[in-house]
Length: 159
Length: 167
Image (cartoon, rainbow over the protein chains, first blue to last red):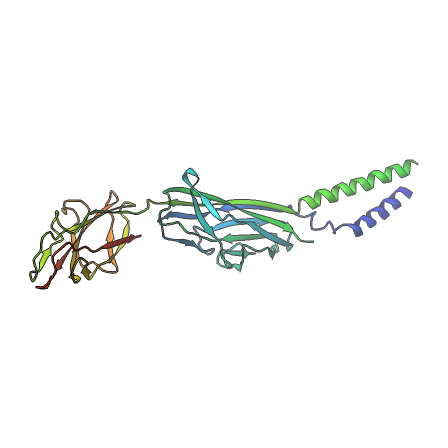
C-alpha cells in the first residue's frame, strides 16, 4: 500500500515536468507521400507551372495523427531539378504554392507559403493533407531528358 | 530498502516512456518533382539571300521559292511541336554608297529542303506560327526585292536578317 502511494506521487511529479502524454499516447504521427509534382513534357525556354489545385499533377502528402492536434509543417525545397549528366533546371516555389486541407480535399485548401513553417490542425479524426505546386523554368538551351528533385515535408506535433 | 528500489524502477520506466513519446512527435515524408525536357531548338543560317549583280534603277526580286538564291534557315527541335518564328528584317543594305532599299519580303516554310512537304508561303514578320515536322525539322526561305535608285553607288551591299524561333 505504501508502495502504491509513492508511485502515485512519482507519476504526478513527472506529469507536471513533461508535456501531457495524452497527445503522444494517441494515434502515432505518420506522413505519407501520396503523389509527386509532375511537370510532364516541358519545352526549353517555356516555364511550366503546376498549381497546388491541380488534381493530377500537384504533389500531395497525407498526415495522420492524434485527433485535432496542432502540427508544424516544414518543407525542405530544392532549388533545382537534376537531369542527364548532372544538368540542372531551376525549380521555384511561390508564396501560394502549398495548401493544407483538414478534409484532405484538394478543393478546400488553405494556402500557405511552403518556404515558411506553417501551423495546421489535424481533423477530428486525426487527418490532414498537404498539396504542393511549383514552377519549372527550363532554359532555352536546356538539355533534353528526365529531371527529378526531392521535396521533403517534416511534421512536428506542437506542445 | 526494497520499496525504494521498486520506486526507482518505476520512475525510470516513466521517463523512458516520455522520451519515446517525444521522438514519435516528428515525422516526415518525401515526394518527387519530375519533368521531361524536350529537345531544344537549334537554328542555323544555311545560306544567304543573294541578289548577285544588280544595276542602278532596276529592281531585282529573289523569290523565296528560289532554292539557290533565297536565304535559308534550318531549324531542329522537338518533333511535331508548334513554334513561333519572328523576323528582324533590314529596310536597307549598307555599302559604299547610300543605303540600298530592300523590302517586299516573302517567305516559305517546309518540312524538307526541297519545298515539297508541307510547304507554305507566308509574310515574315514579328510572329509567324509553324510546326516542326515529325522528324523535328523545319526549313525557312526568305526572299525580297531590292530597289536601287539610278544613282546607286557601285559596290558590295550587305544586311542582316535574323530569325528567332521559340516554342
